[in-house]
Length: 343
Image 1 (tube, rainbow, N blue to C red):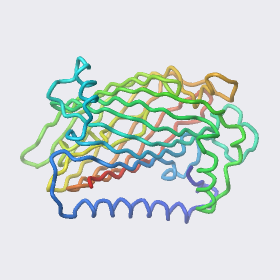
Image 2 (cartoon, rainbow, N blue to C red):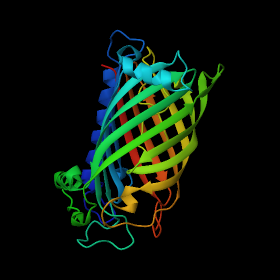
Image 3 (cartoon, helix red, strand yellow):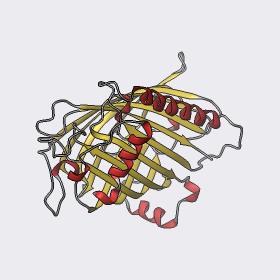
Image 4 (cartoon, helix red, strand yellow):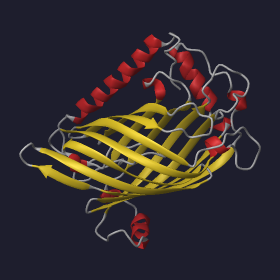
């Protein structure tokens, strides 16, 4: 859902949007500096925006929006604790959190000016979903389970959201939404595990972290196995496991721990996935639709910066993704901004 700057139109709107996002991040950071009683494990609100506006393109995975809330350990329902006890690899002393998610993604072909289907290109698709998550943390190990229910197709309002946004910023509408995937109810179940390894360097005051991860996704949205590693260096790394992202991706954490000091870190990570099905490339599961031949092996490289305040966290991630389907000219890249806060 980004703006094409190669042809010259929308450049001012592109710059205005970037400045707005930066100002919003600054305001969240300043809010995090406000005095208040720090709680050991309070809930966390997250706003995550992923968009290729930062790369000047408008194609493929073009926009993702995710709102979430992750509770503190004191606010976890009893049935969540029973669920965790039933998991054989979750320690009894693990800190538990319950999460609630609302998200929306948009996918388009590389040419959004054509009213006809674009040959050898992924179809248009909107994806609207809501979910519930359980997070368990113990001794630098983080497990996350998430169940999402939603819909792909016209009822997900991808066309209305993208083209109304284009009108708002003064660029042409995407013309090919008549060719989008049809309505289909969706289910997605994911599990991720991360192992954090922190190495403080007393002389410099910095800490280094190496966090490998493994994950699995099941459902008619996407099924995959993934694994990789994230490297971080900075101050205050023990406050989280990295910034949140929209799956499939390198994992982070939807929470951060409050502290009385500022923190920061730079990070880089890689993730490889074996993809068994992907509705946004394979097309609808139970009806005929446009589709492309997906690639089984997909990889992500990400780099970014995180700033942690006493009660807020701001992160920017730049993502480079390998080709996802046969005939794709080159890989994609896009930016992700996350704003997290305790209230």
